[in-house]
Length: 236
Length: 236
DNA sequence: GCGCAAAGTCACAAAAACGTCACCCGACTG
DNA sequence: CAGTCGGGTGACGTTTTTGTGACTTTGCGC
Image (cartoon, rainbow over all chains, first blue to last red; front, top):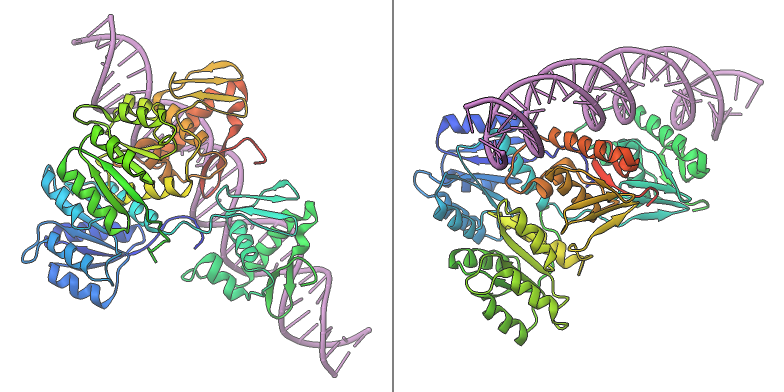
């Protein structure tokens, strides 16, 4: 929702060679991705049915059903139609690449590949698959926040915010006039899986206000005692 | 999660290799676009005359009339002047890129490309309708960059840039006041299937700044902590 | 005014992000 | 084949950001 740092995703690796399988899995995990493994296309389809991954790494050469066929089936099913697929193909198999992509794969990586290359491809695919964030600038009460330019203007004057304060303000502005508990803010701004103290929110609110103070717009960020915080253009 | 709003459009694919042609067509159709095909520039011009497409995918290497010439002709005719063109160029053909843009293309995608990449570009081009012609010299904040002459002037003084720094600056200037992550910059400036460390971007930003420093214009290249880099003429 | 809970403030240490540098490597040149 | 140039990388220093605990202030019912 908020554009930020690394993306972590649940990734299904379909690869019959245990050594490669393990290698890939280790690397992905090290970079914060959730990894599940399948040793065959049939196994993969079963797993995908059970739980939709964010991305599928699909080896071209598989015992039994080929990667190509697997990709086709995934593309045929409306439920799995949109899951990004990256194919692992042998080097130089030009034909494979073409038919692989034709069958619905989103990208390909030729073996042997470096972990870095694989990660880069994954990142690229995940990033592009993500819908263009609410790219439009938010404006209220003399404050203007532009997510694309990553910039905040208070009465025309640039305001310097740290990443977290920026996200916090963005969230508050896009959900203004509504009270958000610290818990909610932690979920929305910090992320669901991050554990930090609730008091931390106070501090960042404080920093946000401090940054807005020179323009006098710090009053837009309001405290609702016993409930949380709210962004509001006065009287509402 | 991965389903953004997509626009569908009628797209003309000009590509002489049947395999690639089919690959592109299949993928575009899957994403709801209407696709018509042309195997040569002459054929393309004929079809365009008959029915104006929303977008043209134009291969650089074509038998007979080249993609370059084709683009020029389209741009010369007032009726077809505004139809967006995306050129498909071979990897690393630096010259192609420049003359391609010079001839009036709106964007280019280097082969080999991934469908996702292509779709992303298409969406981008369609979304912004017709962007500022990237063929012309860009000028902002006292900096002037001429892609054709491959030349940069800072307050009239020539600036010496390496190829990479040049492309980097070009990209930043043509997408100014917008934050680009290192990932994005690697994709856009280095190329789709090039794998280098993210830190490399830092270094080239540094070199770019160093080259601009004598003129004091290095402040145009700004760091946005936690997000990436931005070219901006202050306060915008 | 009193007491208590909630919120504000502050300083600090750890971590993350960035800037910078020197070096290596491959390509190209003469 | 030596020399040069541009580009990529790892290492290291610096700056910014961030979470936290300790402490103070504020608000509110009684």
